[in-house]
Image 1 (tube, rainbow, N blue to C red):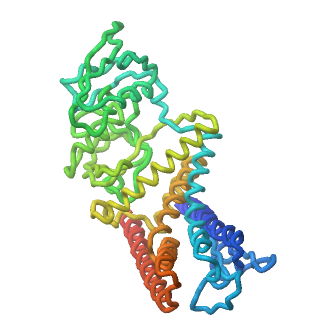
Image 2: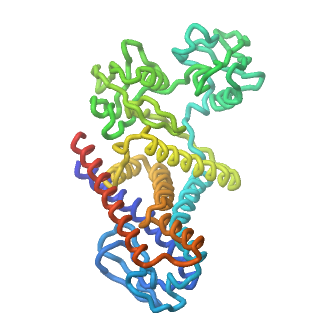
Image 3: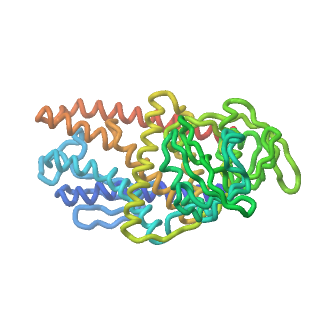
Amino acid sequence: MAASVLRDVIAGIVVLGVLVLLHEWGHFIVAKLCGVRVDIFSIGIGPRVWGIKRGATDYRISALPLGGYVKMAGDIAAEGRSGLDDEFLSRPRWQRFLIAMAGPAMNILTTFLIFWGIYAFKGMPADAYLRQPPDVVAVAQATRGTSPIQPGDRIMAVNGVPTPTWNRAMTQVEKARPGDTLSVTVRRSGAVQTLPLQVPPQTDSLDFLLGYPAMPPVIDGVSSGLPAEKAGLKGGDTILSINGMPVITWPQVVERVTGAGPHPVHFVVGRNGTEISLDVTPTQKMNQNGEMVWVIGAFPRSQEVFERQGWIVSLQDAGSETWFYTKMIGEIAGGLFRGRVSVKELAGPVGIVQMSGQAAKGGLVTLLSWMAYISLDLGLLNLLPIPIFDGGQILMLGVEGVLRHDLRVIVKERLVQIGIVFLLGLFAFLFYNDIVRLINH
């Protein structure tokens, strides 16, 4: 227990510390390029522990290893200004805009570079089953009795295109449109035959059309505070049946949980040679496509394979991945405003530390992927038009540009005070959420 907590704390400090430091370094380097005097560049926050002065800047290490900060000359109007050209508020608005944008931009760039590094040097991760022959071990309940595909079939081709792997087969199916009829060639009991497969006129997913691949129904872990953990499911459990029906592959778990809605689901799992019965009631959460789905908070034990790619392809994939997570974060933010996502689902510093520890347990690639996501989250969060955030400063610069003069100092002070109150309230709420989850844990 103590080792696990220590791992979480160290991982959290590394993740948050490095990402906040990179954010501040973005402000620092652009400020220097714009001729703004930087008085302090601090690694960590709080009292100065050690430092060295180079030129006008005090490069210091502060007591608390949580990120860092940059103190620019004349960046706070209320503290008074000498009017020198090297002060922040003396620089043209376009330069102040660039300095304000530099922090979030550095976080977004960090996300892109992490993904590019993973794909270029380690490879694009994918579930191992996608590289295996498309042997069907089960069919979806929604297509049982209507689909010509049967357990035991091997998918040989879709619309005449050979499909040696599940990845190739699914790629062909994804090209279909609702209402289309696919020509699917299968090998069944040693004989090859071609079957017509009707695509439903209304469907959100085409993954189930060809049936399910072999994915062991073994739980790798459960999310803190969600129904699976509360009901007693644990990592390493093998799901034997759900609501009395045998389970042989993980997609069946997903299908039966999502189909149950808010109703209790009866699980029988194997654990250390014994069978255990549990009832789990799903809850709604937003998925990666911005849709509300029923989940229990358990994820499968899967084997990943990595395929190294060329630098150009890796750049394209890193851009696609960064944009994908940008849209996902936007969907979550939109869901909060529309009431589709509960604020209780948001994680604060304690939650991030816990999840950083879990990511560290998964290995370097998992930890780097988590850092990429948090970096993007930090960058986009700072672009919100809240006075104390970079986005608030950008908004004020835009207003001043329209008015063609700076806002009064008293107005800026009041806006910053509002921003501080909002930020403190937000942190208090998130911290409370984290503590409640820990207590319920």
